[in-house]
Amino acid sequence: MFTKNEIIEILKDDSKSEWLFSLADKTREENVGDEVHLRGLVEFSNICKCNCKYCGLRKDNENADRYRILKDEIIETVKHASEMGYKTIVLQSGEDAYYSEDKMIDIIKAIKEYDVALTLSIGERSYEEYKAFKNAGADRYLIRIETTDRNLYGQMHPNMDFDNRLRCLKDLKDLGYEVGTGCLVGLPNQTVESLADDIMFFKEIEADMVGIGPFIPHLQTPLKDAQKGNFTLALKVMALTRIILPDINIPATTAMETINPNGRIIALQSGANVVMPNITSLKYRAKYEIYPDKICINDNPDKCRSCIGAKIKSIGRTVATNYGFSHNQG
Ligand code: SAH
Ligand code: SF4
Image (cartoon, protein in one colour):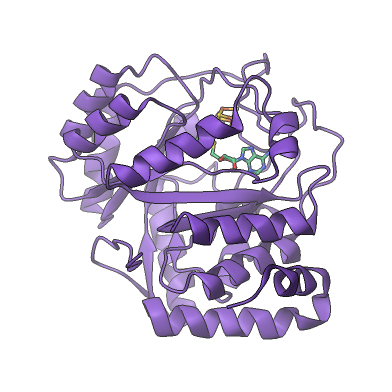
């Protein structure tokens, strides 16, 4: 286990990257094995009441072409994904109040008719709502802390509250969800010291899943002229997270592949053991533009499934056929 100072040194010194990536790969192999878990991602609404400075779905982006996918169409997508062999469905959206507690419960129950684990990624909700979603059958929840630097968090998230983000993570843990969190790498004014704090935070809250992605500037946001995140630095944060939390699930994120054409495979060989292929129907994909140049926006779900399956096989790994619950024993 590294100290915070050691983490900072490693993050600053690129001459140690190769050593770090192979150590993370070995840690992954010894603790969670060679199987790669696929989670089918449904981006079911791009409507958002928040204004996160980095995100193309932010409320003030008037150029976003907004959509909502309703229950029946979500279920069609889930049915098809389950037929393709997906064992986990991830429902992700902006913070869209249209999907009330009752509407979400209805959708969750219908999805759980299929033989799948269900992850929600729909932002900040009350304890009562999280509880109701859990009772309806949701298994996991993803909500990134984005950065543990309170000051930077405040700059990036107008009208949001860092403490409420922490409250959400705590509530989800208390309710027995498998909890996924994570951070952005390369936000303006972010320091390596704060990235080290992010990694320590993942350990402290006993995250079951941690997703790390480089920040990618979106032209219709206040950060349009900011520099994009560095691939190697994001990969190093991910690799350190694997070494410090050996048995959790770590996705090779889509953002990694967006800034490096082989990003997901490189990530799978540097500590990651999960991939989240997009299973959203083609007609909506391009509109879920969190950041520009997202991969696979012209591919249908079948194409994504076979493409990633082949890539995983090409590096000697296998696609898991179980639900892929976390090994994290706390
Ligand atoms: N609204 C939900 C889920 C959708 S956003 C939420 O915010 O939790 C999912 C993730 O996309 C966010 O957690 C954020 O880390 C990432 N994201 C948003 N804008 C991004 C950008 N410009 N570059 C890279 N990742 C981004
Ligand atoms: Fe909304 Fe999530 Fe984007 Fe923030 S990151 S604007 S909450 S979709």
